[in-house]
Amino acid sequence: MEDTLTCSHATFSQVFGRQGQLMQATVQSLNSLNDQIAQFMVTRPCSLADEDETFMPGERDTLRKSMTLMRHLLMDAQGKILKMMEDNKQLAQRIDGAIQSASQEVTNLRSELSATSRRLAELGASSPPALENHHQHNHHDDSLHYRDPSVHHRQKTVVTDMCYPTEISSLMDFGTPDCSLGKVLLREEVAQLQEEVHLLRQMKDMLSKDLEDTQGGCSANLLSATELRVQLGDKEQELDRAKEALQAMKADRKRLKVEKADLVSQMQQLYTTLESREEQLREFIRNYDQHRKESEDAVKALAKEKDMLEREKWDLRRQTKEATEQANILRSQMDMKENRIKELEAELTMAKQSLATLTKDVPKRHSLAMPTEPVVNGSQEWVMQADLPLTAAIRQSQQTLYHGHTTDRQVHGGPGGPEA
Image 1 (cartoon, rainbow, N blue to C red):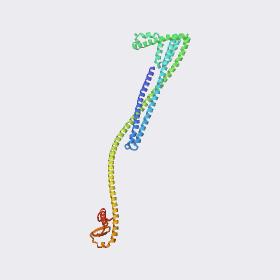
Image 2: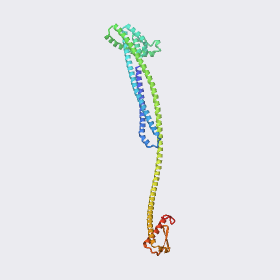
Image 3: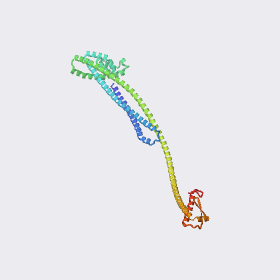
Image 4: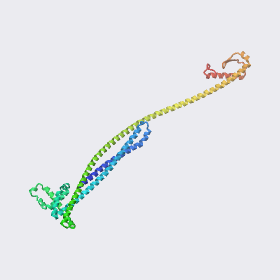
């Protein structure tokens, strides 16, 4: 039983150790995935903000919400796994403590039962009535013998040593026909019995010395035998309780196996969910990269078109500027011509006034003069004689008036144009 407890302890430790390693690896993978998502959320928002044309208005928010949800799921899974690891660790410690205490208690019970059996054997050897009582007690406790094979074997050896001293010699006679079939088995059993008898005799000598020192008399021996029987009953009850505790621990072990199976199924579901999420994230990243490349190509094409439009705009601005300068030059020329026309009109008015004054002085000469050259003066025509006695100032005025009128007609579209 002690070997079974030790194996169970080692098994529990190994199982929880392997389970802890698997959970630690799972937590590390979750941490790495969480770090990747956090790095993506830290580095990508700037590029997402710069490339507004890449996504629709709601796609960026959906991406951020999906990343945040995935981080929450990963953190929740990490917390559950860490809590599960802590619970398993505490449970393993409790089971180890219970198994150690049960093993120690069983060991103590075995030692006490062995000591009690030896003392009963000693008392039975020193007192025949005590031997009979001890033999009856052994027959009464057959269930204990079957439940604990080591105690049964020891008590069997003691009874053999006390009650049947002649059986060993008879068993050593292997020549009889009755022992021919079980010869090998009997040899092994006899050898074991002889070894145990030798050990029990040594213990008997030691216990007899102790009993002689502490108790002296048959009544004291009988009283000690009664006390030993009571103690033996108490130890049997304690052994039953220990067996019940072992049964409870076995039930706990079965329950732990069921919980372990549930935990394994939950871990498999978690791995499946994480794999699907990781595949979705990778697909989203691939689509995002492809969409980003297409957007970059579109942005480059738009940049080229924008450059062409800028060049055309600057060409139009240059042409507009040149046309504006040409219009300004023409406007200035027209202003100069208008000013010249005004000056000529003023001179014409002055010439008309001078001519009117002169015509009032020499009316007869004008009436007798022969027409030699027509001169257009507004709406009137004057005929001038080459030898007309006019002053030089009047001739200059008439010539200026004639040339100014000719220039005016050329500016306004020829001789048939309107007069100024």
